[in-house]
Image (cartoon, rainbow, N blue to C red; front, side, top):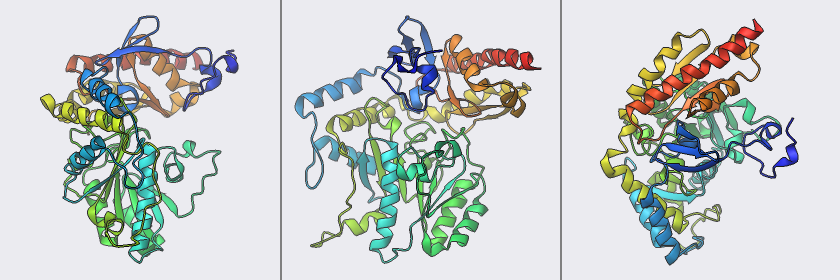
Length: 428
């Protein structure tokens, strides 16, 4: 057994007793390929943690960061302090929102943006004479980061265990039932509900695309009851669904949109919250003694991160990289479809954007301890990296891959499944 003291690095979401002393060390990366320290190459089937949408090693982003660091490496944007890259990025992002007047609030990542959205929702209502609107609703399977509010509204029970995070004034509804959302709003009382948090496609909770018509109906329900619709597009944005914001794949106008990950291609930690003009209005009156949002991250509007994002936005527009998320969803669905014929597989979920989840059957999960880890490692052994997600594996390759890469991912998942089959046979 590995000595857990062998490594001082405490990995997120990891069994450190197993990891310490035996980490899988990525040494370098280029395009959609990464290499370990032994020089072995792997197809990055996950875009790292859903974020390397543009592939690895994009010199355009590196050059933009380097140039900015030489000019202004870092400075706070609290109060009236600002920098040109952050201002330019905010203007460029605001133009992507489906209606004019949006404001952009920056942070260091997706979790920052979820906490920001929750606070802004409650504060905006309070400043408009509705301080009782504090309740937050989310969906089962939903993942909204690991900060305070994100943990409180999580739809993945395992991610709340042991933390005793205050869950008062929050509730979770089925991910696929808009009528259940309205029923919960009515149960709580519309006058008490501040916001509904919704991933356009649920990501870390298992990759669950929305049923047809769900997004439109959920937005309409929120409008009917004066509830803010917050699209959590941290995974879905910047090309993953073939559009800028993910939620704009549907003809709706959200009240807020949380983004991160692909905004810089993952090269720099950055989150951006899009806030609809009417929601932000109480903080932008320009009157003496106007309310101040006493909230923000140290690195909000970091100039080097903003420079990285501006370069990334150029690359998304170049060669229509942005649209490839929608273009490649069909080949991905086709490549993974044969897995559904295996008795080891419960479900293949794909078809809305360039991401998919493949879930193992209940009896396999019950009979084979560590079945998901066994499958992931077997897929890695044949040269493809996939992401374990509770009951199965997920894939979300960089947008720059071609159809042969997609076919390779499907073949690797099928080949790796043989290791799970052998383990299952051993317990029969």
